[in-house]
Amino acid sequence: MTRPRIPLGSPLQLLLLACSFALAGYAGVRLLDGDWFGVALWFVGAALLHDLVLLPLYAGLDRALVKAAGRRRDRIGYVRVPAALSALLLLVWFPLISGRVAGRYASATGLSPDGFLARWLLLTAALFGGSALLFVLRLRRETKERPPAAH
Amino acid sequence: MRRAYVRGMARTPFSPSFWRSPLRGPWFTSVLGVVLLGGITVLFLTGLLSYAAYNPDLSPVNDKTPDKGILGFYLFSWPTDPHWLYRLDQGVHVTLGVTLIPVLLAKLWSVVPKLFTLPPARSLAHALERVSLLLLVGGALFEFVTGVLNVQLDYVFPGSFYPLHFYGAWVFFSAFVVHAVLKTPAALRNLRRLPEEQAESTSPDELVSADPAQPTVSRRGALGLVGGGSLLLFATTAGQNVDGPLRRTALLAPHGGAEPGTGPCGFQINKTAAYAGIDPAETGEEAWRLVVAGRTGTVRLSRLELTRLPLHSAALPIACVEGWSTSDQWWRGVRLRDLAALVGYEDPPDVLVESLQRHGAFRRAALRANQVADPRSLLALFVNGEDLTPDHGHPARVIVPAAPGVLNTKWVARLTFGEEL
Image 1 (cartoon, rainbow over the protein chains, first blue to last red):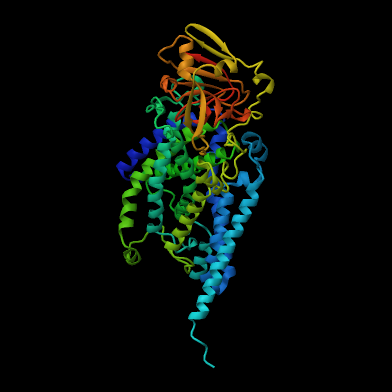
Image 2 (cartoon, rainbow over the protein chains, first blue to last red):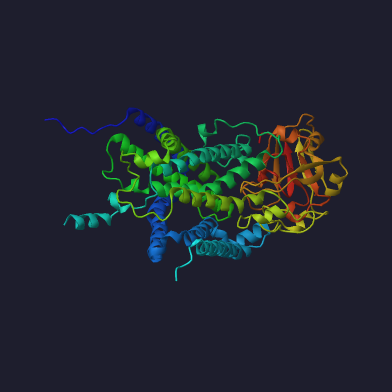
C-alpha cells in the first residue's frame, strides 16, 4: 500500500519561501521582543481587520449604493467618487480629525488642533459640490444633444 | 434544484460566484502591483536611509534597536552634504507612504477572493506561500498603520515606534521580496497584453469573476479613482515640507496649515518647551551655564560669554522623522568645532549632547566627528536675526546639516567631546 503523496510544488518557490521565512524570523524575534502578544495582535489583527471588517464594510456600502441607484446606475460615480475620497481622507487622518490626539498635538507642536474636522468637512463639501456641478453640466449637455421631441 | 444550490453557495465567500465585481482581473491587479513594486521599494530604501541618519552605531544613546544584529549591516557615517539630504529622504518616505495608501487598499481589494480559495493548499509550496502572504499583508498594514499613527502623534501601538517600524519593515520586506520575485514576471506579461487580448483570453484566471455583475465603472475608471485618491492625499500632504503659503495646501497633514507663530521665529516646532518640561528658571541668564567637557577639562560658559566667541551663520532646515520640514532658516551661533577646540581638540571628535529637557527619547544624543567638523554645525543662539525663542531651544540649540530633527538638540546643557560615548 502506498501512502498518498503530498505534492511539494515548485522547488524554486520552496527555496525562496524558506529564505524569506528565515529572514522574517530573524527580524520577527526582534519585533516580538517586548510586548510580543500586543505586537502579534497588531500584525495579524491588521490583516484580519482589513480583510474581514473594513473591506466587507465598504464593499457592502457600495453595493447598497448601486442597489439604491436602480436604473440610474450609470450615474453612480457622481456619488461614489466624492464619498470614497472623503472616506479615504477620514481613514488616513482619523486621529487628527476626530480630535483624539488634540491635547498632545497642541502641547507638543504649538499648533491649533481645532481645524482638522472643519477642513475635512469643507473638503468633503467641495468634493460633493464639485461632483454635483459636473453632474449638472452633464445633464445640460445631454438635454442640448437630445433631438427636439416631435410634436 | 441546481439553481438553488448555486444561490446557496453564492452566499459564502468560498464560492467563486460570491465575488461578482467585473473589475477584478489580472490586468487590474498587475497595474496596482507594479506601482507598489516601485513605490514600496522606494519606501524601504528611504526608510533604511532614515535609520542610518540617526547614526545608531555611534552610541547607545542614539540606538533604539540595540539588538539589530545583521540588519544594521549597511550603516555608514551619515554625511552632512547635501544639507537637505534628510529633509528630502524623510519627506519622500512619509509623503510617498501616504500617497500609496489608496493603491495598497485597491491592491488588497483586487486579490481578496484569493483569501478564500479552496482547497486551502494545493501543495506544500502553495501552503507556505499563503503563510507568507499573511506576513506580506499583515506586514504592509502594520507598517502603514504605525507610520500613519506616529506622524499624528497617536502612540497607541504596542511599544516604541523605532523598533516596531524598523523590525516590522524587515519582516514585511522579506515577504515582499519573495512575492515580487514570484509575481512580477506574470504581472509584466499581463501588462504587455492589450486589453482586447485580455477580453478574448480563454484561460481561466482565479481573479476574474465567474459570475460578473453588470459593470458600473470601467477598469480604467476604477484606476482613475485610485489615482485620484493618491493625488488628493499627495496634494493635501506634500505642502508640510515648505514654509510660506504652500504649507497651507497641506490641509490635513499634521504640520500643514498655519505656522505656530508670527515673525522670524514663527516656524514649525517639533516639541514645545512646555511639552519637554523646560523650567524657565533653569534657562535664565543667571542660572544657565553651558558645560563643555573634553581632554583639557571642563569649561562653563554663560550665554553672554558664548555670544562673545566668534559667531558664524548657516542656512539649514529643520527636518523631522514625521515627514515635515521647514525651509532653510538662518541660524547664528558658535561652531561646534570651535567649542571642541576650547577643550583641547583641534581635530574635532564625536560629541555627546545633553539637553535640559525632561522627556523625549533623544534628550541625550551623540553626533559623529564628521558632523562636529562641518563649519555649518553650530551651537545656535540666534535664528533669523533674533534670539532663539523658548520653543526653538533658548538659550542654545544644536543645528547640524542633514541631521534628523531630534539630533538638533534644543535647550543644550552639556557638550562632552571625545569620550567613549
